[in-house]
Length: 511
Image (spheres, helix red, strand yellow):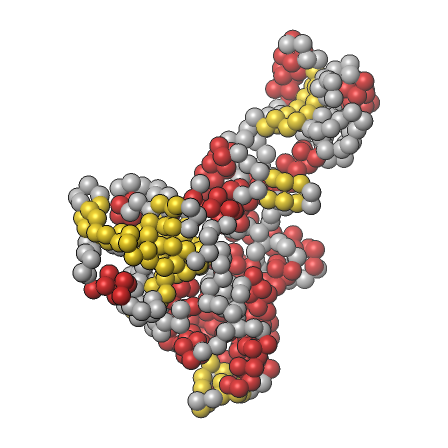
């Protein structure tokens, strides 16, 4: 429009009156309104704004909702918004159509406050409590119907810094989301309910270090869930290892075993085929290792990780070609609470698996950690703890790269990873390594060596890396170099990605 018709949100009545005085003094007539003003006074001030007699209403605890002033063409935020709902309500006051009004100007003077991460969450209606998703929404343009949401680089950096310091999946936040969904459903919600109704991402419960399983969470919410120690251990395994849906094979077998006492291998293979899931002997051996818990039989201090999942195998072979649940697990399924939560975790994992390509071990541009790589490469044991940046296997080498180094004093800051043409990534072995080192020779000379490339933007992004596909070593780029202040030897080489990086992934990881 030709003249400002603005609504200013501030925190205190004294502040509102002083701002209205200063606005008017500067030639922009303004009136303060607070919750102490009666409805007649409010209507008079709104009418003055619409007529153009004043330019601004300075409000305290008013106009968040329940008020309609279509003529508003400017929203000014001068208060910390502690709620994404309130942020949307305030923003929405300026989004009604009005003759001669082509757009609304929003001036947020508090954009660098510690809760600014709520802005992308609010604009994207993101209630997932997933920090990874929030970061993606901040770094990349997002689309809602015909609207595009795009943050400037400076705004993104401020929001990302805020996200790094906040805990989105804290118990207080999860408790509120839980009670909201419980009130909506009229019953105790399960993980699949969170998936189905677009509330908290189910994986958030699995990744929460303070929770062994969803049963543990329900106990903290005051629900009466009666489980034995063994039942809790089994639920912890399914939640922590399978719920993410990154591989369908174990989930399908458990689902089949819920319906029948013995599953023949030929029936299992037929079910995998129906789900377009790849199969080979190494894969079947890996499924055995996971569901027998042998994969986790790695010593950690005085115990093994296997111990936290109950030691007993979930699935046993009655012979070479038949699968069955172990007797303790079969008996536990007679217990209503346990069966309900066990089935729910499998059902939710299968739903989350829809984001993955089951014909391949890894899905392009999905996120994985080092343990995921060990499992999905069908390795017999979880050797992720000593893996660090890579591990040269007999035929498979996963490579994990942190592109932006948070601390130049850290070991990984020695490696000057660079990306050229969206396809060629300069990469270095660990130090000290020489061209004739055993692992370097195996890397360079093993015929058919598969290189799997995983990249994350910075250490602040946690344990998850984006899978960028397979790569080949550019032979003429291989050379020994001296890195860091101490000039330690490493072997550098260019890795040529099979799939040139998409524009969005390039922006997300490398800009």
